Image 1 (cartoon, rainbow, N blue to C red):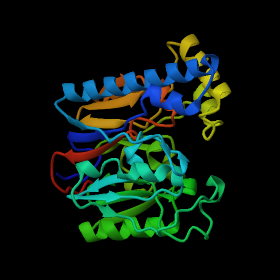
Image 2 (image 1 turned 120 degrees about the vertical axis):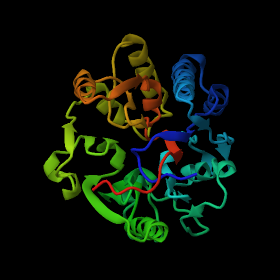
Image 3 (image 1 turned 90 degrees about the vertical axis):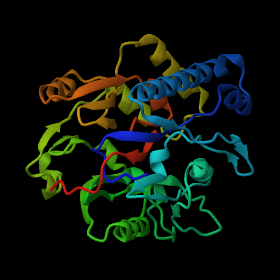
Image 4 (image 1 turned 45 degrees about the vertical axis):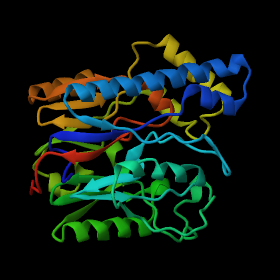
Length: 334
């Protein structure tokens, strides 16, 4: 199984999981009043994942799922294996597994071990850091750390977030670059002037065509001749939900979000965090009339998927998927 780019036809993919609703609620120990919003959000998130899996199966794409583990451990509550893009990256016929900086994320990096033979794991110390998220770039985190969502592959060229912020450090960047060069000695590395996950900024649709939330002036020179559709839409409710990114288990926050899901059934939380199916079809979370219209003009079919409940758990479509195989060999798209 090989993956050389984001823009070749998809053959197999890992799709993330959330905890079973009953398991989640048993750990929170809330009264029914406060448990009900969590139940609604999590059950809808399960349904959204199942719907995505069905759509992928319709395209004859093989879908694998991470193993679900106990939400409670000796370090407290742990996070679900919802975003395999954070730790799992295929390039060529190798699979790279990244680190997590927080103990409650560590266990999820092993949830896909049953799918991979001999993965290349980022080295780490036996003692994991409990460092606060706003200090993850501190030099005291003396081990490689990088979310794989900071990496976009395009055959001979690979793009990395220049400033990973809380999703990586310099040692992590150096580790991934060296591994990519070991796999493809001629790979060309480009740094993109942005912060955190790169898949929130650019989406490669096909050779020569991309979506970008960055102005073209901030993109690497590699994209100078590409057709770049600038996506500058801002969805207020989505940005508000990010204010509470680390407070998802707060019952008041859950109640507010459940109200949003009930009261705004037609509301879309569009982002370019999407998944390419083949050379004429892309999946994108939510719906943007402008973007869909522009892609339709260019012969691209857009499939909109509902991810509003999954967005509560901080996952986009690209985040909650990680390719294991795409059709085709190593290409130079420059």
